[in-house]
Length: 124
Ligand SMILES: [Zn+2]
Image (tube, rainbow, N blue to C red; front, side, top):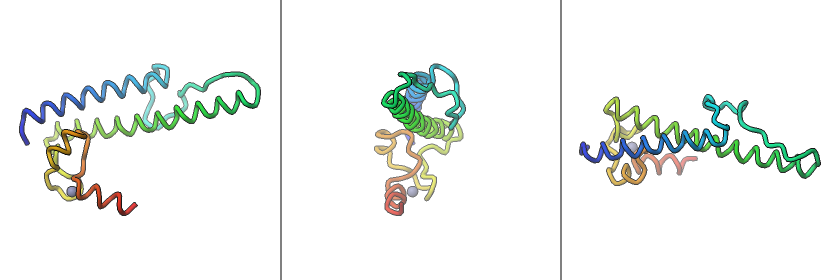
């Protein structure tokens, strides 16, 4: 893989990592949480009425799923950065063939080639 492209992708991944960490800090109130830890997730307090309680639960589950989504992306981004360090970046984790550069440029955290990704999503 071209070194210049690799450097660019690495930079993009590092920027993404920073952004995700910041987003995560916004929903957890700046508390550094372990992956999958919801204990420190801020539970909103609107009031004691039924509709207020329902709104609290809705907001909480929204931020819970958002937190999960951010954590998943962060996991992918950090995995990609780790693969760059180990020099296995750009290699499909399923078939070990090189991943199309255009795919990596569009989605630098990709760990699977298009063929394998399609195979996986058609199975589930
Ligand atoms: Zn593959």
